Amino acid sequence: MGKRLYRSQRDRVIAGVCGGLGEYFQIDPTIIRIIFVVLLVATGVFPVLLVYLVMAIIVPLEGRPSQEPRQTVADGVEDLKETVTELSKDIRDAVGTPPEPKPDREDIRRRRTYLIGLIVVIIGIIALVANLGGLFWWGWLWPVVLIALGLAILWGIFRRQ
Figure (cartoon, rainbow, N blue to C red):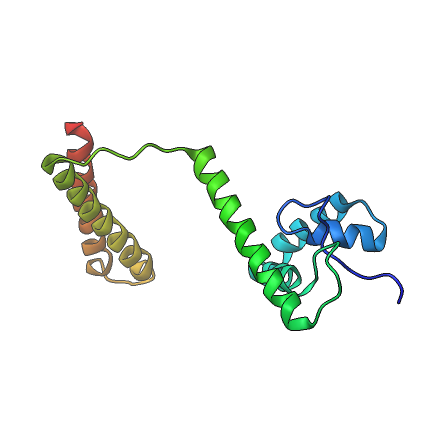
């Protein structure tokens, strides 16, 4: 049998799919990665991400002996699980955010008031935009009042800080 497609063990960033494609087509894997990123942006994340995940599951890892398809898929899922676990650990270590201190009652009240003010402003803006085409002054007056009320609530919060 001729050339076979494998996921690369030597040149892998996530699951070795781009490295394996680069080796198979004898192209620099960085070019394959750039193409994947461009396709992610051009088509939306979901289609290309789905293709990548399917390839990470069904394409066997380099150096593994030929096995039946069920075992290849099981190995691919297990390898992907380990990779995701390692990546999430690396991200947690890199971000390393310490736990936030528990907010006091005043902070909770301030956050709730801020949220209410923000919601009132958003509702007012939506209503204003919806009513701008109206000919009657009361069609846009109440949204302006809501926006002013929400801004007053938000101003009160920021002024106390």
